[in-house]
Length: 320
Image (tube, rainbow, N blue to C red; front, top):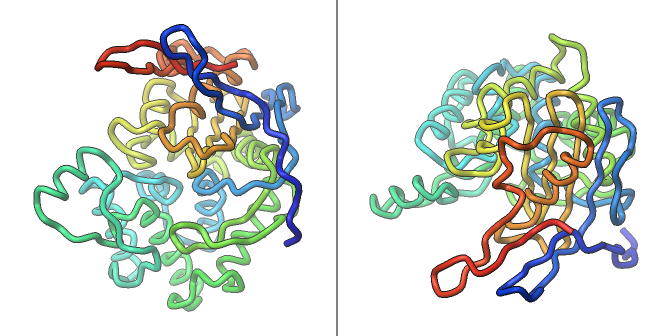
């Protein structure tokens, strides 16, 4: 793929320490109305980017379309980035077992838990990294279940030319309303498909506004009903969906977040520096959702992040 010019990202959040601006998070954000129209856009929202794990609802939809017998918690974890709690590993294991497979079939790399509680227990127990504990194991288990359901090979299920990954690409292009701009390898080893920020938002919006009983709606309904399987205790997706019933939240690596309100308004954010501390994308996304007229008061505290000095708050990160 030819090297493109650097994106013209814009200031989205500022970090204020003791009354002085210390740094600025740049990025892009787009907001769609309940009818799917662009009503809020800042930065290069039409430029291809990697949605990373924010694309998992599309991948889960493809697994459903391929015949994977997923519902409820298993469908939620298929679209999630779990924290490696025991109940997460158990659910991924059960998806595999129902397909006649073991965790050895997983193509994602071994990992330690990402959730703080699970990681502490993991370290204390002196355990080694496991594929089931990798945050994408639910997605991978669902993909494998889809392959078994269709009689497709499982050893090469992560190959971009595998029938399942071709279906993932077709599904992504269909719901996002645009062609995939580039294919890369994600952190979990699965193909990662570049779309625009507008495409990411439209994809989630189309799934949210699909007819009741459709596979598209089934994925998002499962995420809303089982937020603890999408992420885990104390993590952004679970916290937002627990406190705002009906909301769909899916975070992605390197500064990505997509939110879909129960009423259809949808927001997608990309923070250009990757937002490693996850202190900018959530407040930027919620501010955009609020601008669209969605009541975000149940998570009002998420619209700012404390900046500490000497062990006490001395400033804040806030939207611009």
